Image 1 (cartoon, helix red, strand yellow):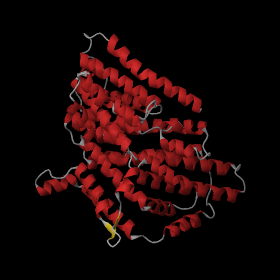
Image 2 (cartoon, helix red, strand yellow; image 1 turned 180 degrees about the vertical axis):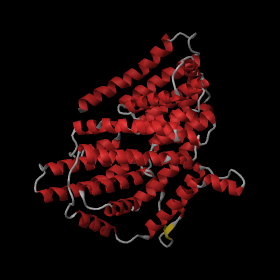
Image 3 (cartoon, rainbow, N blue to C red; image 1 turned 180 degrees about the horizontal axis):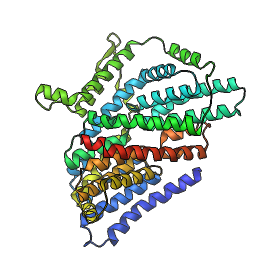
Image 4 (cartoon, rainbow, N blue to C red; image 1 turned 120 degrees about the horizontal axis):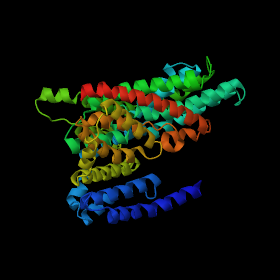
Length: 483
């Protein structure tokens, strides 16, 4: 397997620049402008490196900053500006808040408390894990959430193994498989609910601002995202517990004591946890009611980026002990911040900027404007299905980075609101349910050893179909009502 990965990376390393040269030297200048050809060629290079991971993804994202100025597509100032876009600092603020939650174990306390509330039956435990995973994944990395939930889930499954007497018991197998799959899927589904829940959401919001100067607020996103999360979680829960992996376990002896023991080990709510909870709650309040507060103030003073960075800065300003000069976070904690994701956003925005200025987006729009007889509903369904299929094979961030500008061209060609197409496509990019390689949470839970490949593919296909219907219905109703 490692040899195959190494060969794939080596092929990708060579293929990327080769594709760039092929497109640059073979595309007839009359069909596209010179700048369009360069942008198209660079896009092919970046997609190849992203898909094969021939180079670290953030390194690939730096290519536009180097290639565009050298080849006259833009100046150095224009090429570097997207790497400091406000939407990047929105996500940075969200990352810092998440660091505070993780540093002081508040996320683990929330998860254990939710699991305790949902009961000790097989399905009750699965529901508890799904709810806690999804709610935490709304605010922190889905990968970090999955990693946190895995050892707790492993403890519960070992309890069940003791109760049934052997791991070969069919009830144990169904429960363990269903539990691990539900955590993996809930981690991805939860990220859809908020702008900062998963990187593709932030990329899309940044594109809307850059291409159309449209500000997608935290509240308007959640009005769509939260119902989507609830419906997708419901579909996932019913598929796992009622259709594919019915465990028929009325109660798992010892599970209640295990959760209670883990909560006791955390002790009482500490000062640090209370302060983190206060900062997090205040930040969420301002995100949700930002527009109302701006109306009350009489000027557009608050925006999501400012609120996110203010919340992040509070984590460094609030003291836990003035005597020891100890604060909720210190700068050494920032080494855990996923800086590479922020560079990836910048590279995506820079490439998208080049696609717009070179006329590539307009060319796509003009092509689709000549198509007749395609309804908005069919268009949304088709693009969402394409996004859902591609996200099983490539990074969801890379997919959205490349695909959303194309979707904007389609929307312009049909003269419809671009967010009607872009939002469903972005949500679909988070529906990577079929394979371990599709998304990190799948890989994390697959490594538990309780999930077989055929079970993940079978469940993933059915859940993808459910989510495709849910997203399309929301796109034709709620999204169009709001935007």
